Length: 555
Image 1 (cartoon, one colour):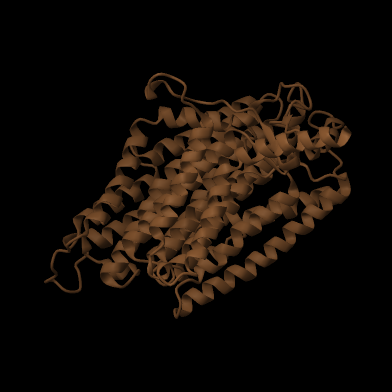
Image 2: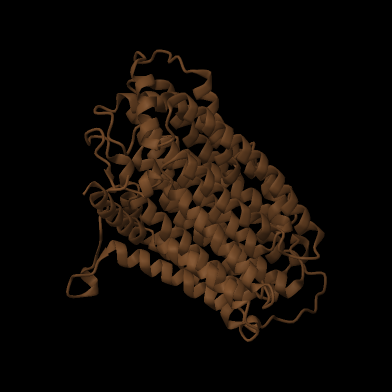
């Protein structure tokens, strides 16, 4: 009798878990199918880009169907389902609005990256199976990073995202820089993974659990005992464990001073791979950082009735995270000044953009997480668009060095104009989406400063300082972005008699679509703001009673 009841519960649990996990299962099935296709001689001659794109679109559709109420009479009345947090697979993963939003970002971006690779011809037919299997595998790992609810799953997800990324970085066979980039990526990545795993072992050994909500309860117990504004006696093991885990996340985020791999890897990898790593890797790392930091601060588990402990945790961790955010943004912008390779310049730009997004998380609020989600969507279009233009220019000139693009506006005004859209958006010039994204980040910093001013002035001044630093860095970044356009528009080309390029229609469509998204989202940004706010809603449910997170029957 007991066995039958247990089996029934297990069956219900697995059905629920597998259904919620459907998009990731579609990615897994796609990887297996593409590998099997290479076993047949007739199918071995097919370029698998279209197959990979189909798999990703199916995963996107599965995520859409799961989370949209389509029972209304017309599609205009369809509404997104408001998901309560549900543990999957015994608590290893969590299924909530945040995970759903990040799925849309990661899968949508992967689909656009595959489209770009089909337009530029990298990879070729022979290597397409390997390339797209690695790409889908990395996407799968990044999706798990966004939904990890257990430290063991955090480590597994980071490794699942990292290992395919190492291979993608060195995918240009016969190119010395590409092999060097992959080697550096592996060495730095292996070191960061080891440090993270050691940190996980310290926290799990100290508290006897690796389940994030349980760890949050343990952190709350420590900080509740501290007087307001007084010192908290943290165990060195807790401090080191938390620090080591954050170092592993900082590596994936390319945050200062764990950014060393980023410029070399981006320069050595193809522009298509660099674009994927610049957005998808950052998005997954930021999602993991938000999940880890906000869960430990008490958001989303409902264990802190008055929020006092959350504010105390923010009091200690907010300034530390803010310092790294400020250093990351400032270093990225200053280092970009001296770059002559466009991919390397965009690599440092990526580092600085990560700094801006980290600023939103220093507030330790759901509003801050929502601002980061908004920024990620805008960053997706403007950064992918910039790398796409680099890939198109590389195909035309055979070079990615800025000096090779002098006066190139005479040969292709369209590519230069669309690149200007993306660069100005990265700066934050209105009415482009980059302005709206930075406005969101700066707005939550200002509001958080006002909220913390009465009881935690040091934390409030940290928010205001980050606001000022972010503004200064925005002005600084304008210089090197404008320099790129100056070279392309104002400087004379080496050969005065250059023909106008005939740009393929697919290139024009892709660049035009990215530029249109940057402009439209910058003007009509309220729907995206509402969606990102809903995506961050799981981190704003502080007033629920303790233990109210819904767990699957098998959890």
